[in-house]
Amino acid sequence: MRLLHTMLRVGDLERSLAFYTETLGMRLLRRKDYPDGRFTLAFVGYGEESEQACIELTYNWDTEHYDPGDGYGHIALEVDDVYQACDQIRARGGVISREPGPMKHGSTILAFVRDPDGYAIELLGRKS
Image 1 (cartoon, helix red, strand yellow):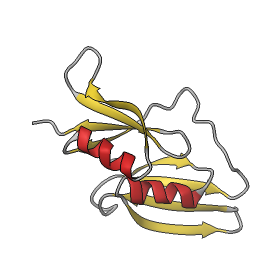
Image 2 (tube, rainbow, N blue to C red):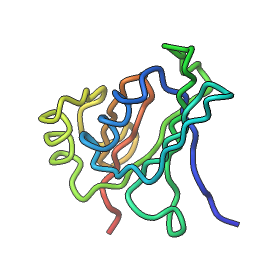
Image 3 (cartoon, helix red, strand yellow):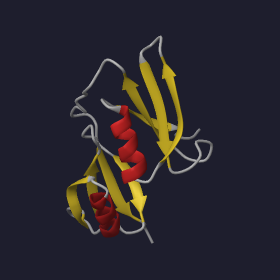
Image 4 (cartoon, rainbow, N blue to C red):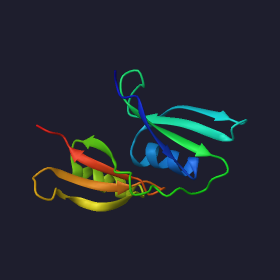
């Protein structure tokens, strides 16, 4: 078994695609409209789906907003340098919701960014 993807419902697909591709540097791997169901699925990631997990963005054509709820935690991304990644994300218009620094009660350097729908994305430095 292997992890394939995580699905997020988004209120504006083009805005979300711009965030994940332009701000976080992922690639659009595939996209398909389902007119009979009135939804679109778009898969984004850093590598091929056959090699690593990705994110499925589900856009229901008749829904403009979702509340992530209190059960959602975050998606974690490994980066070379958390401080530099935050600078790059900020320069591309991304919102840093927790500035980079050591985690509470530990030494791991991390930060959090929010996507356009409010989903939290954790940035973690590479472990040596």
